[in-house]
Amino acid sequence: MLFTNGTHANYFIILGLLNTTEMNMPLFIVFLCIFLVTLMGNIIIITVVCLDRALQNPMYFFLTNLSFLEIWYTVTIVPKLLVNLLVKCIYISFVGCMTQLFFFVTFGACECYLLLVMAYDRYLAICKPLYYSTLMNTKTCLYLVSGSWIISVFTGLIPVTLISQLEFCGPREINHFFCDIPPLLQLSCGEIYNTEISIFILSLVVLFFSLLLTLVSYLFIVVSVLSIPSSNGRSRTFSTCGAHLTVVLIYYGTMIFMYVRPHSGHVSEMTKFVSVFYTVVTPGLNPIIYSLRNKEVKTSIKKITLRLFSPCRSCLLTLKMQKCISLHMEPFHLF
Image (cartoon, helix red, strand yellow):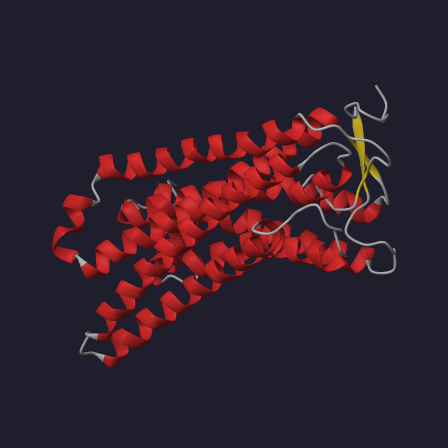
């Protein structure tokens, strides 16, 4: 069916990030670079943690899950954004739009839960060091991660189920660069009050609950760090926590601005640019802030790099030694 009053749409038209085309190519280059850095950074983190046994502990187990999540979270949104910057309007089927919305909400919610789990892990490591190995054992880590993924799937199913049952009419143009909740609610011509309230409550619970517990964990960490006698240790820990909190506040701040408010209003240009922060910028910052600034990760990268190139170095050394020996040996004649 085509777009008619009181029916579902069989496709949508995604208008994209900008209404003009002057800045499309510069933005395409910037977003493509961020996209590649995000993919490479997260793949490096997963590879390094898997290859280095010294990093196979709860903190890096959670980091690898976050990196795995960021790869798919970015792939869900950014490629279509890049295509949209090159092509003014692109079509997406109704099923494709709902699928993208499901994965976007699922991965977004899972990031909230994993950031909370990582904050809780750091709280136990810094504030309860004597009990850390007992409390954060292998079974607990698996429960926390699997629970985060399972709850995220149910979190993603709720808005998709509600929105897929709405009636759409009028222009089939999504004034955004992906299938997001506010522009889809804006397109609906039916009664959306119950849907809007349900999504608002879900967003409020997921975002504020996760943010509150994350901030409480960091508050206890700060209090514990203040008792460290070494000023160097305090400054190093505050530097790390400050970087983590910056990413958390950027992510949660933009998400709360987008979803913990009425959705049926006009989707402005500022709203679309706010979406860029939690779909493009934050996934690119996470591998840098959480891992690549980490001394242990950088040491492991150097160690793995030397290990990978060590056979080549050995071959070169052997060739040099053979050449040196051949130059110093006297010719040998039988007769």
